[in-house]
Amino acid sequence: MQQTAQHFDLLIIGGGMVGASLACALGNQALRVAVIEAVPFRSASQPSYDDRSIALAYGARKIFEGMGLWRQVASIVTPIKKIHVSDRGHFGTTRMDAAHEGYPALGYVVENRDLGQLFAKQLASLPNIELICPAQLKNFAINADDAEVVIERDGQVQTLTTKLIVGADGGRSAVRQLAGISHTTDDYLQNAVIANVTPGCDHQNIAYERFTESGPLALLPMSGGRCSLVWTVDRLKADEITAWDDATFLAHLQERFGMRLGRLQKVGQRHTYPLSLLRSDEHIRPRLALIGNAAHVLHPIAGQGFNLGIRDVAALAQVIVEAKETDIGALSVLNQYDQWRKHDQDCVIGLTDGLVRIFSNQITPLVIGRNSGLLAMDMIPPLKRALMRQTMGLAGKLPKLARGIPL
Ligand SMILES: Cc1cc2nc3c(=O)[nH]c(=O)nc-3n(C[C@H](O)[C@H](O)[C@H](O)COP(=O)(O)OP(=O)(O)OC[C@H]3O[C@@H](n4cnc5c(N)ncnc54)[C@H](O)[C@@H]3O)c2cc1C
Image 1 (cartoon, rainbow, N blue to C red):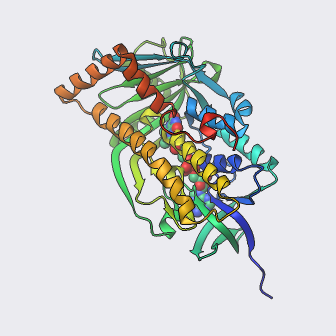
Image 2: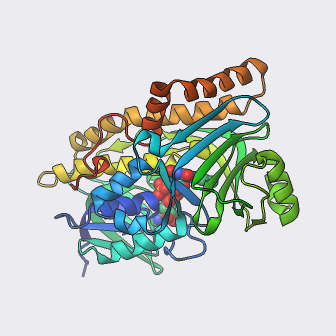
Image 3: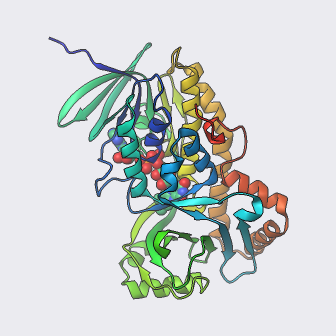
């Protein structure tokens, strides 16, 4: 006897930070949603909820507020009250201060593992969401009225049907590949080295972004007086740098960063990530939408990747909820999501990529230009405010969730 396939209104492939956010955003809606995630949230090898910490922009806070999740997220974050940007060995500096701009914080630092635990708890509490994990997407077929999705779970192959497949399965998206959607990649030939560092002085909730000849480095304020380091280095040197003993690592870092946080005392385990810009050539097809890293992977220079992804979530969730009485997988519905997101994605990708290129270059006119830019930013408040609104995720036509309004 043939078994009927289990049906869901929506199948989210990938329960990483962006996929889980979408599921939370659709919690308690009259929609049956399943999240297919390959690696358990608490597993040491979970690729999204790993040892990184990320900076959530103020705009991400508004989205969590809209989802009714901010109270829980607030309990695991460290606020960024000020940002200090400098170019090592040059005159340019820019400072941003939340209090001056009338915000409680410019952003918040969260440990990915903590966010993973929070999402796992939240998803388990939502009656309309089913987390199917560990399970892997194997194949799918798009039909006129639905899509058939083949997954492997506990060594068993299973077919599910749905109105809409959302690819939230990261930079190497199987959804994107199986759909035959092409993408462009621009390899920066750089790696990010990440670690937790304990400075000698109180970080005072200041985030530092320092551009150096060997690449930008960021030190973000964390709990327990620690700072989260993201150090961009030449790919060829990344393995050597991660293998340095603690004292050598701290000495080199101190030399690059300077004494703004006093003498650096301690460094934790190092991890390294190859960096490239990836853009999917299409973000929608009938019954299919891509969000987060499946659609765009950015350099972490300005801490924008997840923040852009959660804004995809806010727009797609709204479009889906508004169409829930009709067909949420129809191209006309998904087109609204695609059109809505294009401008923000282009701006953030352009800004991030531009920063990498301008600050990875030592040609004299460029060095003078970028330092004048930093100074101008410091001295011309409207310029600074426009950049802040963009990087804080507050620019353009905002979806309801991004204004803190529930769906
Ligand atoms: C060093 C570094 C620092 C960063 N700092 C910041 C920052 O400060 N601020 C910021 O906003 N962003 C930052 N980012 C970017 C941020 O980490 C990403 O944008 C974010 O992780 C994207 O989330 P995602 O859910 O789209 O993809 P991922 O995190 O890649 O998650 C994809 C999920 O899909 C699952 N999956 C994959 N294939 C399948 C399959 N076939 N079947 C089932 N499941 C599957 C994976 O197991 C994973 O859980 C940083 C990135 C790096 C590398």
